[in-house]
Image (cartoon, rainbow, N blue to C red; front, side, top):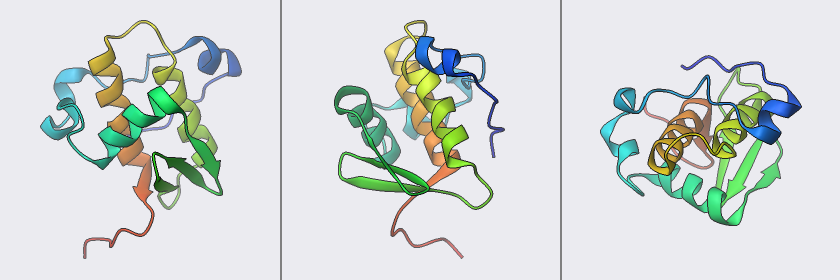
Amino acid sequence: MLAIPELTAADVAFGNIKHMPAYSTLPEDFRRHNGNDYCRAVSSWFFDGGKGIPNGLEIGGMKFVAKPGVDSGKALRAIKAVLGSFEPKHEHKEAACAYMLSEWFEKAGEEKAA
């Protein structure tokens, strides 16, 4: 699991991409536009916003809850800091945010693999 960085309010407001995974390290399905539910959720979040729910986020009709041991507020700040940055190319930003979302959150109601 990716480490969740400690970020300030300024990092979130003005963008901070120091913790953003390199594009070449992201799995292929994250590098394809709308390659999976996490990609579709981040695309929707970018254009339409998301809504906080207890221990997670609702985006585009999908609910995501923090995985065990994940501080949801801290993880969401880390994703928002990348999503709000003007620095990276949009494709990289969307893929990296989707990957971070998948690392720290699971889709509510999904069956866990045994």
